[in-house]
View 1 (cartoon, rainbow, N blue to C red):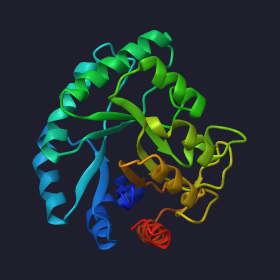
View 2 (view 1 turned 90 degrees about the vertical axis):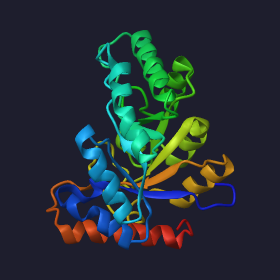
View 3 (view 1 turned 30 degrees about the horizontal axis):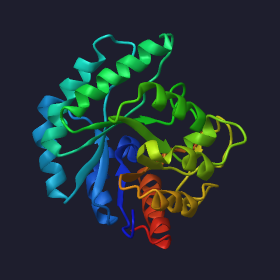
Length: 256
């Protein structure tokens, strides 16, 4: 960030079943970047046109990196034409070791990183078990994989969801050198508690998060992710209001 506000984006999944409103609403909220799913070959032209229509760009795209498949590198490579067409350099993904031997999982991640790196793309692993559950696990994975195109997408709420007695800012500080992207998500802090409201309505210290990123000269995207609260009725008005409230919270923090 180094004196800059950096890229603030919005993940389309925030809108749930109302994704048709996402382009328009994100642009109206004053954002210029989004995180979308990797479009299929026959969706690329339409996606490019829609982004241009609303003055948006894809700062990250959610792609597949299934380590259970021996051909994971080839499947990552098959997604690269979409990254080139949209000018996107970051693949967000959730990868798991599962029942694989650790060395097999690490080697497949390295091969996936090679395939992405040939197109200038970096793969960012979500803060999920079992390869990026918390800072200690992230450090173990990053050091074992040891590939510059395999990095982390640090999720400010998942770090609480998957762990007990933990502090988001301190966890980020431990791994920030490996962080390529951030999901800005709030939470009530409960373990396995699905409670992800608008930014500023939970316990996450976003000012502290941005301070750590600034100290590290982080220049990747920070993406809004609002997954809602278990049991509630998700309406179009509710999801749009939460995105708007989250954007306003970031404005108060002088991030937009």
